[in-house]
Amino acid sequence: MQRGSIPGGSGSVRPLRLYGDPGLHSPSREAAEEPLAALVEDMFATMYAHHGVGLAAPQIGVPLRLFVYDCPDDEDRRHLGHVLNPRLTSTGGVTVRGPEGCLSLPGLEAATARHDLAVVEGHRVDGTPVRVEGTGYFARCLQHEVDHLDGLLYTDRTTRGRRRRVLRAARRAHWAGATELPPGAWA
Image (cartoon, rainbow, N blue to C red; front, side, top):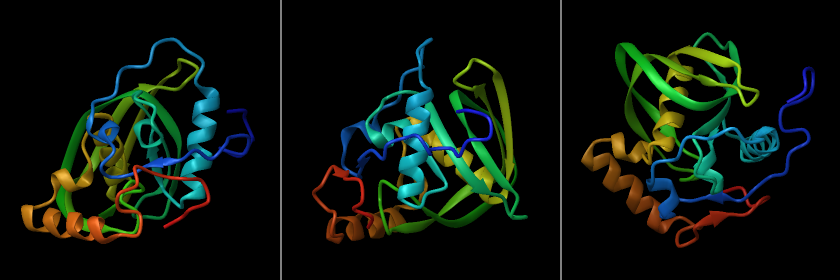
């Protein structure tokens, strides 16, 4: 991403993988030294096209440990960036049960318990080390995206009853049975 450019401005919107796609339930592999700037641009373009605040590479069918974010915290401060090969190095604070949704389960959400503080360490695609600390809603976003890279969805962290209700709604959703949501087909 060039300094001063709009993230995703030169990217292409890719189809989103939806609940039921086996790639969403598989751990992602570490990314080696490879050119990934175009992928990051595509991920931002896709995230913005679907009105998300975060997007992990497996959600567009790329099994790499990479996610992008443009997410506010509880004080409405904007956090914008990407992390390659992230590790959730610390969580803390109180555990907050709050509404959580996912672009791979469009239009659905459930109360999910997350820590109020999260720290992720990794690299930018240019190799620069990065440490991202988030609180509140942004901490939830960081934990959610790292979960995607480990093959987990927020439904894996909800209570059994909430999970059952969300998955029942997913079976009735207009996108049920599809494994991907094409560009422009916002739910």
